[in-house]
Image (cartoon, rainbow, N blue to C red):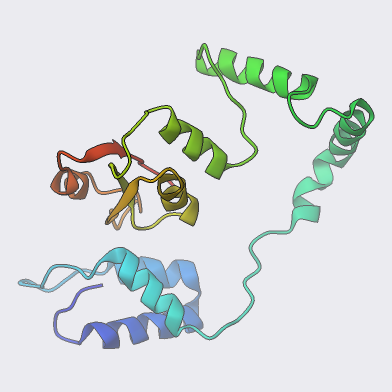
Length: 192
């Protein structure tokens, strides 16, 4: 979204209207892929634009996925694995976890694999392994799940938000370079 011609708020309202009329994918493509007039001002932060567009949308339920349909082809295998785990009473560090770690390590060529219960734990352990001093900066994308910032904050580190690229939504390398300081201890390059 650009701040040229029409005001930024007007453009956001129009984007919200396109979302209502045509659906999210087509609206995002039209909004982000549209040609800009010569001399256009720099873009409004993509993360800010996305957040504001969604604030303008009416609260309607969004069907993200149907787990029953997704699991149907594998239901028998999932049920058997669940029953084996319950019978072994090995929810943590059990044989299935060891097998998973060994297979993942072999596939990735890694000597050490530490399975985690969730992404927050994985991010926290990764940052802990760096032994960064309290207050060290961790550069993170502005368009990410809250756990990316939470992991740094839980360890007494300072998350530094930088913008993302509009075509990939991945962290912008130029924004990372601009945000680097002597206090920077890590960069978490999330891909969604």
